[in-house]
Length: 175
Image (cartoon, rainbow, N blue to C red; front, side, top):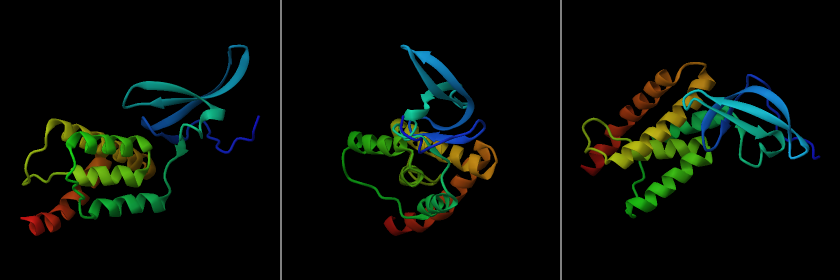
């Protein structure tokens, strides 16, 4: 067996790219197909889901510790930037947004959140835009909450405050 590059302890918050922030609740050893496997048991409270990840596969699936403070600051700065609106078909943009969310990269998730944000005085979003915005902002809020030791609604308020402060700068330029 190769040396483990990543190791997580019970109680650690981790980011699993497809599901967001979870917590290691247990380390298990199980016999599967005659082989003994070590597993991380992750709990995702929001989805009410438990996931078992073989310790030797954790890095391969992109499981990681919470972002660094530098990455968190970078993602918060990204929220303040000018939204990038591409003129491609919605289905293609939606796929790109989903890929960014599922990458688990905090700055990419912040980009999606920023690009799909609509202030109260802006035109309505389509249902699918709203769904992707909520998925991105929720994923960002959960990691922010875990890092700042607060809860998701508080973290989401902070994100929305940053977006609402930045939005008027860019709305006037186009209008």
